[in-house]
Length: 482
Ligand code: GLN
Figure (cartoon, rainbow, N blue to C red):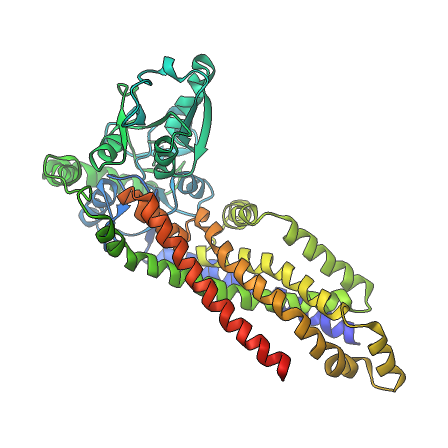
């Protein structure tokens, strides 16, 4: 009787989740058919093509060109700053309608994507630390490490010459991390597109360019092969128009012309101060995602935790599988699987926040299940037996005798889990969630101030976590007394 109730509850919960999910996808589709807003993926750290200004707005040549083209052609769009590799993957799995990210038009990519006319000439160059006078050409790389950015043309190029020149590749997810690796001396050089590196050098990113650009690699706007052809057409038409009316020239000159603005002369403290609003916004998201995920994790933990200590073998088995699976898969893999894998396989679009909440809830849910199981099982069996022998029913004995004691045992582990989940939200920056860590990355992409910004981010995490644990400790004392 009891077990049927539990399984019924679990089943309805799953059903609710699935219907909610498909309803969501359906709603998104319906919307897209009426007044379509195109979702455009981009990089987060590719100045002067895309980066956030001090107000947190996306600016750069790509952003401004897209905006001018959309106005010219009268279409609506929404930007998703995912990082280059993630944006390209999102396009492949149809999570976005197009990508504009200083994306080079290459033969290999043409197999999977359709490109617009090229809108900017580029090419890969080698960058070294500004004070490095020994590495001047590919020949000087023998036995050394070279930083590259995953999924980029620079990476492919480095790979193609790595064995010839005898260097090892160290991959990074974004350009500013790659630069940092060169500045700190772990890698002696990096490969990057020349307009980007040239811009960075001008902003005092601590590097210099030492080779001539490799040929090829003009930038284009991309859509999935055979899809969104009307969007591609509008992009091309708009591009022609803005080239003709001077808008294109105005935009490119804002960023790479003689009078382009720079943050290079800003003081360190001023820079941190200017960055605080976007960091605080990121922190708000971190907290929001933590709270919502912990709520669902708690529900999952309750269900599966009780299944695990229950008498029904089948339910115990189900709960064990749940814990094994979601505790066993690294969070980052789970995030990629849910956000990119499932939508690609099933052909629907998964909203980012849903993917983020699912990932965190399932992962934390597995741990909460174990906390609850451990808590209940830590209470001496003799107590249950004594209660039963006094004629108290199982359920009543559980609620009145075992659980109140178990909760006290569980509290420290819950607090621990809260801290872990809060920190784990930072992993979701890999799928483009703009929480605190991602906000930090975005600011650094613009300012190159790694030390100051990572220090600020770390302090912000510490303040929040210490405050939360203090509050939790206080509550714990109250529970123990009461
Ligand atoms: N132009 C390079 C490429 O397409 C790099 C793009 C980027 O890092 N945003 O691979």
